[in-house]
Each structure stands twice: as C-alpha cells, then as structure tokens.
Length: 382
Image (tube, rainbow, N blue to C red; front, side, top):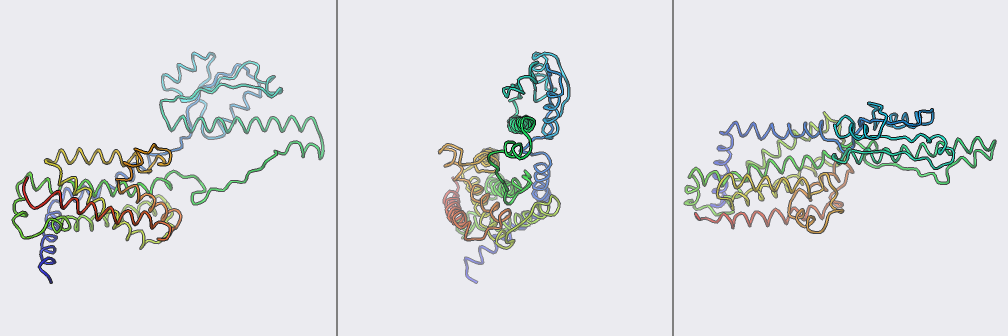
C-alpha cells in the first residue's frame, strides 16, 4: 500500500471513529430524514380538496341547487353555510370560515335557458394552492354543467337520430396521463424529496466538520500531518458517504413500501448515481465549511442553500417558467440534476442513456467542488 493510501485510510478511520462517538448527532442524522419524509408525505399536497364554500343563492330554484350540488359532488368544495348578501360572503372569507364564495343571481334559471347565465365565484387568494385548485375546479364544473344544460336543451328540441347528432360534442378528446395516472402528488414529490433530504443531511454535516475542528482547536493536529488537503477532504467525505447511503436506503424503502410510490427503474443504477449526487453534496458542504470561520456562519450558508434548493431546483416549482437568473442559480446546486435523474429512474424507468447529461453534470460538479474545497481549506491556518 502506498503512503498516500495509508494516510487516506488512517484519516478515514479517524473520521469514522469520531462520527460514531457522537451518538446524538448520529441518531439525528438517521431520524431527521424519516421525520421530514413523514411530514412531507402527510402534510404536503399540491391539489387541495374539500374547500369550505359559502353560497348566496338568490335564485332559489332547482337549477341553482343543481349547480351547487355539482360543485360539491366534484369533491373540491364543501358547502358550509348559506348567506343572503355579498357582504356576508366576503365577511365569511375574511374570517377564514370559507375559502370559496358562490353568488348566484336571482335570474339564473331564465338566463340559463337563454345560454348567458352568470355565476360569481370568489376565491381566497391568500393561499396559492387553494386558489389554484378552486379556480381550476370551478371552471371545469361550470363548463361541464353548461354542456349538460345545452345537451338537455337540444335533446328537448329534437328527437331521434337528430337529437343524438346535435347533442354530441363536436370534439371528443381522449386523455391519458402517463407514469402517474391517478395524479397523486406524492408520486411527483417523493423522487425529488429524497434528493432534498439527502442534500440537507450531506451538506449540513459536511459543513460542520472543518469549522468544528477549527473552533475546538484540533485542526492544528491535521495541519501538521503529511496528508494533503485533498486527502483530508476525501477522508472526511468517506464515512459521511456511507452513512448517507444507508439513510437513502431507509428513506427509499419507506417511500416505496409504506407510501406505495412505485419504483420503475434499476435499483443498482439509482444507488450508483446516488453516490455521485451525495459526493457532490458533501463537496459543497465541505466548501462551505472551508470558507466559514464559525459554525454559525456555516449554518447560515447552509440554510440559504436549502432555501434556494427548495425554490430553484424544480422540486415543486417548474424551472422552465423561471427567469434566466434563477435558472442559473439553480444550475449551481447539485439537487437540480439529481431531481431529474431520480424522477426519470423512479417514475419512468429511465436508463442511463436517458439521464446521461445530468449524470455528466454531477460528475463534473463533484470533481470541481471537491478540488475547490481542498484549495479553500489549504494546509495552513488563516
């Protein structure tokens, strides 16, 4: 064994022993990803159902009741109260008793026969997901109800074959959703969520390593050894890499077997690419640790990185709708590339030939960030 390999093995053994001695941190590293997964899985939903709805029905006839029932039957709305003025509708939304207000005019039935009926639907715009779900559902229900009324009217006016011809819609669109036919939010979120959790663990732990040794005064012992800066960086990454891979396996197993999220691709390929991603994240964390003077500075930089990661990597919000500057910032975060890899393998069953561009980006990213971290750390005390 060469001297370089001996030094690297000795440093890795030292870092492993140091990590295993801190049992509280070790338990936190294992427990935190599971807690985050459970919170996201049970609490985060992009589509909101059963929005509380207040109704002001000035028409009071069977046609208006049918329309309200159509809104309730869509499962997006729950009728919670009926009021008699628009001011009461607004007040109910202001108090938070309702998220949706429906105002039906007194001449609803007569205008419905003429084909120009109007219904005012008020939405609480203070909650983004609620208003998007309510807006889309209300527009769809109104369109389906209008089509139903037109069909019934044409059917009454005609008979026989002519009725069938006139009542049929001019275009029939057959829609099929691939990979997620039931549009379950967790199937969309989990592949990216695993990457987000692992980046949080890897960057957070790596960002504390060098700075902690600088604060407690043990870094001098490392600096007087013949080990090179890159060897010190690799030695600190090795035990964290193994720990992160074990946590990844646990989180993935919980997502697949407990929450029922399908895994369509190659498990071996997924874990091999996970190594690249965790290496890049650890390198980024060590870069933060190398440029930070105190643990508080490292924590603040890590929190800023997590904020950018949640907003700019495509975890929830699509990147193609972002301006160029946020997209460039997102390109500097390894999670951006792994989200596409994870969704491709887990959801679509994609192979390496379909995700190779993101894999190449992670390889380059990991090498560059590790070298930069080693250069920033140096072998000296600043």
